[in-house]
Amino acid sequence: MKTCLSFGDILRVGQPQLAEMQRIGDAYPSPEVPGACEAFTRQVNIVEAILVQNYGIAAAMTRRADDLNEVAEIWNGMSRFCQSALACLVTLKHKYPYCGTPALYDKVLDYKLACDKRYRGVMEELACQKTEFPKGLLPEMK
Image (tube, rainbow, N blue to C red; front, side, top):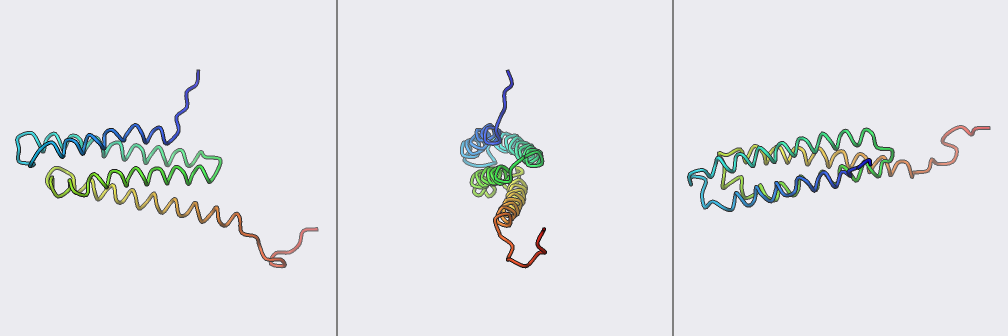
């Protein structure tokens, strides 16, 4: 039996780790509590690894995609994943400023901007495919 995952399936696998980062971040009243920064830093590293891996998978899948709509869907999904991570990190980067959180926030933002740029490029390409050339612009084929 051959099993196939969609990119959405891959992104869903990482969502619990985002929730776990939020849970750990909220579990401690302060990063000075013994073990807080260590536990949070471990989760930050896990989320960073998932981000980098998912982006790499997105890039590989878009290179092999047969349809530009599929490419757009992949980049849009990756952008939404980044947005979910940013939503968690926006407050946690202030609470845990010395636990790798600000650096991860910046990295996630860079990845989101890259995904959005690729998505816009694909959407422009799709729009160009639907644009008709004005009559007489190109020589007529006989």
